[in-house]
Amino acid sequence: MEESELKEILELLKASGREARLCDTPIGLVDNPVRCGKLQDMGDYTVGDVLVPRALAGLHPEFMVPVVGDSMTGAASPVAS
Image (cartoon, rainbow, N blue to C red; front, top):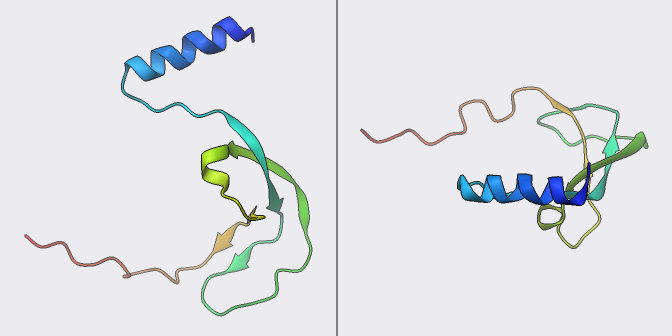
């Protein structure tokens, strides 16, 4: 993709009220799902990086890990009617 094409796409997104962010910051991806609930050792299964917008990456080392389970089921506050 040419730089001019990317700029055009970003301008179209901006004009439609969307905030466009480039995914330019690598974050480690762990290929070892962890269960929700009790703390557990994940081991060392980093397999690569995922690119995210710099604004979402923060200042500290971070990683992404798949999570399985229902630890947050029912955690939402009831909506007042």
